[in-house]
Image (cartoon, rainbow, N blue to C red):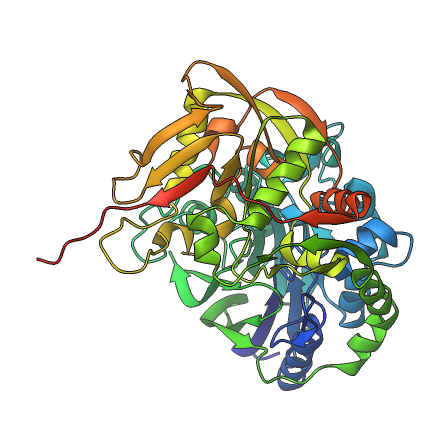
Length: 533
């Protein structure tokens, strides 16, 4: 071997696929420019172009679509369809994401067992042994020229703030930065790794250019800290935030994040040179390859055919009828004044839980609402997360603080159409973090400064008292303080309802046979008119 050798290594990354295996939108089966079956074409192209490729999934794979839901809830004994597809493409490794736990540890353990590749997470350890629960914290790829490339897996340690306790029983989530320091040193010193790639299911807590905080420093996302505080990382693959990031370095670490729903393939290309017996990175570049325009890999479609047919059959089962109108034409209108769909969801939550106060959200801007003849497709098109319900006991002050948090969803009104506060749209849309309440009466004035927008708040006609206790039903994500609703974190749980909300909604409608759109208009968002100067 020549003392001066060159080597090109290509790292291909997927992340936050969320069960989007086929290029369709389940609400109407219209084609989309996303999905693993199209992304697979890009992976094949890159492998044909580059001799040395490593392919890694960065987590949040097995939850997120009706296909994933149907498998988990109704067909779990069958092989996992998402795992079959990654096996087919000969992935080198995958990292545990937070949504991997949504259907419980037995389903996750089964998926890991069916994988022909290892699942990595150095900081998720067994409480009993202290060892990495999923077996391998890292892998090392050795090449014929002596090059050793290590891939270390890490997972956001914020999972206990969101996930149901029984889904993570027996696990401990260690701080990501501490685990990264420990294992990076080990990989460099003991495993003699020439290149260290960290695949972290988490994102960035600071602006990539300035280093200024972009979110409360809770520990949910620590990508910037990994680059600035951990010696020895060459490449940081990220996810969780659903951002599109490429062509960037932080403190010399090449970083990338390929969005969500298999819309992009992340690509990092390393040019390596061997000098004086040691390999070093001569240059590094990262880019995102869009699946838009890519063909569909038919062997992936064939692998999914049986699961997809069962899912489609399930989705089109009629479950009930609607009197009145619950369709959504403008999602902003839904958030400015109560809509029959939101009132219905809150009423179901109150009916099932026995609580007299409820909150919920319109999760995204493509929810279509309910048509006159309701099917399971309509349920999962509107309630897209596998949330369960909890009743927690909060103070009147907590309630007001939560309403102020929701009111900050709107940018300060200065005239024209109402706008979303950039903090709820960047780095990713967070429409699901704006809650609407039932069982109380309130008014938000978005012309006022943040923190001073709740201009009236009553319960059953009486002012909400700051020190009085109120029982409120909400989804488990919010009850744990998710979405920076820190006032809810750690509050007493009065009742836990461990059934998916989509299933609860479907059962409620089937039992009623016919539901009716209604409004009591218990809340509204207002603003002061702006007079022309």
